[in-house]
Length: 393
Image: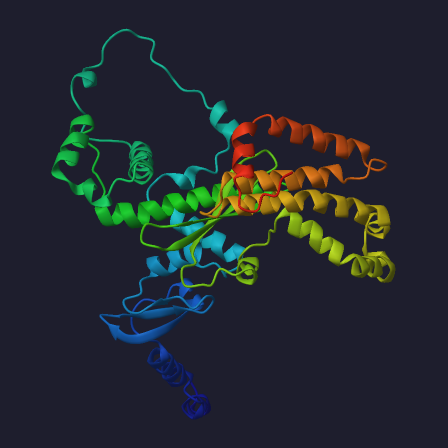
């Protein structure tokens, strides 16, 4: 090396020192411990840290875990309980939860055709095997997963308390049946395995509903023994299948029609038909002003006056039925009240014009006569006559 090269090397900036400085700065910025799970992007840290854990608040719905928020709990909230998160995100975390419970649901990607195409080897020899005379102390993981599935279904469907899984008599019973199978702990059964099964069922239902058309959303409400008001939102398919969408505790809410309308995108047939009638002028204006955006069949329907006349006749029939059903919900309802509503329904059917929709009027009369025969008319007539508002000749 010449003197000039040595001098140049000494005068050149030391890049190694700069790299060391940059690495030191980066290491200072990094926080100790494991990196956060992706699920924390949906939560805000709240409260003080205790043993490395703090509380969490959901950015989407506002749910809070005051302290010691763990990743599994946050994933469970996003996948199963948060009602405002996007469906794609919910589905992602439902798959994570489903694979967590050791129930074998991760292998459900094999379709039925592939399963049926697999041949099961059978031993046709009559010779006994030596392992048939003692209980094996090993069990295949697939059999463990099948047993876990059956166990969680047993406890949930039969309403068995989860703590019984650790009862000595129950453990003895399982060990006699299969010595190699180890029962899960109560915490595993009530958390990981239960959430895994719920996620699996929800993903399966979502797959069925994606291929369905003509879905109807229904509402059923009841009061618990302690006075809590629960509402179940049920999806009905065209084939008659029913799936529970969600169950919500609305005890703290006022059950007004406006509030229920916000909670459910379904109204009664009467309200639906009546709302269309009230929007007749608006619908006709849409058919004229936004004609390019509408289907031709739809434009013909909403522009035709006969369509609204048919709706008016339909509303006149449905309205007394709606009132009769509402009347039956009151504790003070008597047989006379029921009979009065039936008479109103008969009057509405009789007032239908005979010149239009002859077949509809005929079917209404046939159905009414069929139901009329199912009543004990003498008993209803007696109740009707004894009613305080009865005015007979």
